[in-house]
View 1: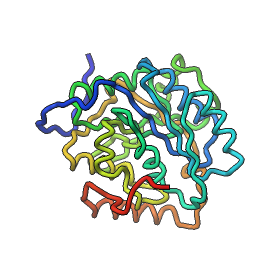
View 2 (view 1 turned 180 degrees about the vertical axis):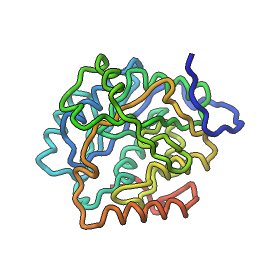
View 3 (view 1 turned 90 degrees about the horizontal axis):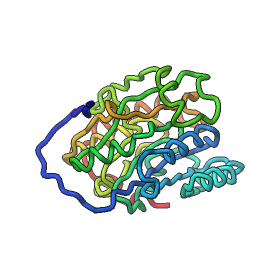
View 4 (view 1 turned 90 degrees about the vertical axis):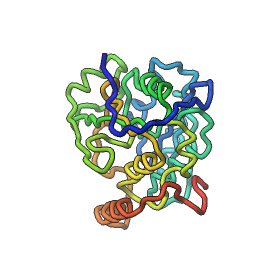
Length: 276
């Protein structure tokens, strides 16, 4: 039987925080309203975990207005709570996700993205591991689909393994995450709220997910690789698709990395977080 890979281990007493093992999946979006979003939602609704215990929240961070009705239509189909945020010319994934995380009431939260889809057992395996030992944050490998491999809605779960076999492996190599990708992370909701969510000083692209994992580790959580027992796949798209900016993206990514490397506090956003 496969075992999860333990990256960092500390000795803690396991304590359950609730009897109901429910989970909220939060996703941030800006100008990405197509089959990839449908595939993401479909994979969440096709889990082998009790669907009644899974809530999905999509935060639309000022996408073009013509997309609003389309988002609403897709969200209605997959029973997704849709939150629209207006007048945000600068992409801020941290703030976008925090809007949802701040209001999560479930025991667990999964921070995900609109261009990934999950293996059928993803949440059952993650929650099984967190029930065994709650003081963890779970992340996994990055399986990246080739350009042109996914061009529309896919048949889940029958096509999952076929697509995964064609995927390339992307090595992120940054900080505590090593070769793993922290863009999808899952843990007890209480930990995200205790540190005021993602750091909202990160704008545009880069480092906010790695920073989150770093802070959860500093809080005392184990950072765990769940990929030996389950996985998720990233659907190919042009880099930085859907976000127009007057800022130099490469320059901002570099600034974000410097900020992450030099900031070691756990609690951020002292002037409030997830507000809109």
